[in-house]
Amino acid sequence: MALRVLLQIDVQPGREREFERLWREHSSRIRELPDNHGQWLLRRTDDPSRYVVLTDWTDEESFRAFERSEAQQEYLRRLRPLRAGGGMTLLTLVDEQPPVTAGTS
Image (tube, rainbow, N blue to C red):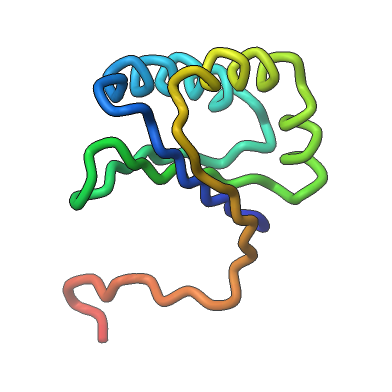
C-alpha cells in the first residue's frame, strides 16, 4: 500500500442505514479495481451519524483517476443528499509495527 485515503463522512441523522447500503453497493465495485487494496467503513462510537472510511490504493495517481471516473461521480451524486459534512485526507505510510504473534518476540 502506497496511499491510504481517510474519509470522514457526516450523514444526515436518520439516514445512516441508507448511507451504509449505498456505501456497500459502491464498495463492491471498487474492490474489483486492481489499484484498490482494501476498504473499511467505520462508525464513530460517540456519534452514530459520523463515519470514517479507509481505503488503500497503489498510488495517488490511480486514486485520482478513480475519483474522476463516472462510477465515482455517480456515487457522489447519490451520496450528496445523505451527507451533512466531512472531509478527505491522503496519507502515506511512514512506519508499520505489526502485532507480535505467539511464539515470536
